[in-house]
Length: 499
Ligand SMILES: Nc1nc2c(c(=O)[nH]1)N[C@H]1C(S)=C(S)[C@@H](COP(=O)(O)O)O[C@H]1N2
Ligand SMILES: [Mo]
Image (cartoon, rainbow, N blue to C red; front, side):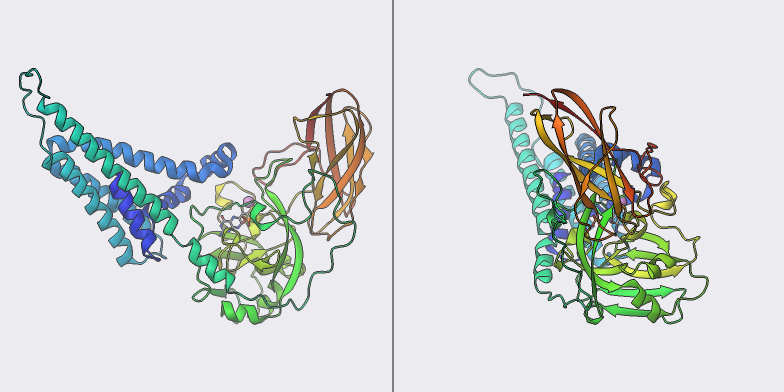
């Protein structure tokens, strides 16, 4: 089984457009499990959900392999048929994805099955079997023990080869090639650059989240088991649906359109209060309004549905796309072409909305639809509308940490994209709410740093915070879980002050 999987993965890795069957099965599992199970997996496993799923698939395969091995000792043909069926299931899962070419997918499945069956034949049929145990002769190694050793050695050797092939195939798949493509891209100067970062927008407090999240530290959330590798040379963006003038853009054409730059904080609806599924970046791209104006949106089109190359969809009100000037098809993040993890070659960024309804990565189409069409997460138990809730987060001191008594900083970030942050207050134990000092605002769409000096006295303390948005609304103290429309409640950090 290791050899079957390894050869299939290696074939997929060597041939640029051939699919990984393990990933294909994983994708099928992700798309077909019920919403509650998917939410449970994300809540308990977090971003480890993908390795756990793939590991589970490999484990089930190995157990199946063991069962087929036992069967093959008696009856080889049904066992070989079992391997073929196993490869067939993987191939079928891959073929269900329209992006996978028939010939290459079959090739991966057939080579994997052939290699697996071949090894099974050698191990179960061709290798000498244990004969009737001869009466042990003093000074002679019994034949059966020798066979057993040889059998184990060949099994271990082929398993190792299978694992190496699998790991090699995984490493070969796509990434390096994509880095070359990205490096070759020259970003146009934005027609409307973002303003300079105001002095005082970034506080100098050790441990405080930086104002801009470096790309490599930016949280990543998506349903893709393997990041889609999209060649900008063949990529197309379609604008279609309820429009009078549908059109298609190549990457080069998209890059020729006037671009804007905007600093926007992106948040995931799965972010717990105090969590880190939120980041701030400088995005560059083509404003959605320009594309919608060109397509002439029909009356009755109420939803903009982004569709990705891997079939993910996310929809939000057309009005938001038209009203929020910074809503864009982004091609760059913090001054470089979008990283693969964050949607290369293009993605949507819509200030004020959680990513699950708006921020489609690896964008392939913008569809104008009625409100009745649902994006990926809606039938899985998440709210149809996803405005980002006003939130504060305490970064310093670290939750559960120990600080020395004396003057200590309490600091963090707070965000209410499109509304801005007007005030942050901090409460220690049961004391009064005290107003924190705010860093300069970078933009209403961005998080804002805040800071409060604290005379820390020995003992155990509870620090709470709350933010007020630019419309004067204090964030709610009502605690809600992340589903269906985002966690709320005040962040609380417990610390021990002592030496
Ligand atoms: N193609 C695709 N785009 C997607 C998703 C996805 O699963 N697939 N997840 C969305 C969600 S839930 C969030 S929170 C953001 C996260 O963007 P990031 O990974 O760049 O931080 O991407 C959104 N775009
Ligand atoms: Mo998300």
